Image (cartoon, rainbow, N blue to C red):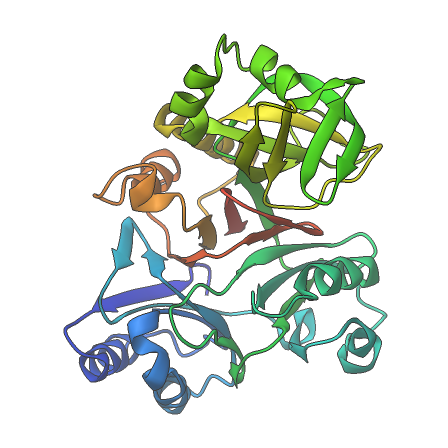
Length: 370
């Protein structure tokens, strides 16, 4: 099975989606033994039914997936209606191991069943954003993988936040680990352009920055963003973001956070995350053009690394991207198709994207099976 098998369905009712999916996957290659499944939150109440019936039709036992407010298939984004995106693959039995529900850090060592004679290459993880320990669990899991890395995302939904790891679950993280014998390449698009240089956080309290490089934090922001007045900042605020620099990384590796408030009397600003004194930040600009440019840069990088057309792909993008950033005609996903060609693709729009050991925002993470 050199090429994976993917289908999608968008219908008026969940049961119509299930019927259509079952009809389409009935023609899947017999050697398929692993499934990815992503559904819109209109399918929440019917997810177990869809999964169980897919198992019955295909005979496949092992599945991973999640709910998303939007889902992804080859060349298409689907929102606001009952829909599913499914991809079937074939992996040797000794090259993957399922990750059961892990709701606490201390459960990792007990629950992970991974043959130590195999070198773990990477994992695909889905998480519940309602668990406050999700970031810590992701980082602890990454430490268990030694030289491997993790990709994935957090469920986005208006109701229950469900994931799939052979069965429907919730409340923690879950997914699958692969050995080094499964070929993949991956990259992420931040969608932002860094402005200026990194700045040391000299004084901060919780999510409020007071001093950067010993200067008033808001003044540093204004200078880097080339803004002459607070009125200009108010007008440009939707495009101004703060990158929390990852220790030991280069200028481009940072997690993007929102600017949520400014105090012009005290020259301070607040973001939607905690700030740690001694760490570094970099200011970023984000708009439609920066998102397009950075997405194309990521795709060109992957294209240069590919030796042949991908067997299949998984794309996890931020809810703030997609139709809200690129346009209403699946422009973000069509960029993948235009650059890399037609190949089986699945994925979803997440409430936080996982790459390596970090939880990102406003990113797109593309993983290609080679």
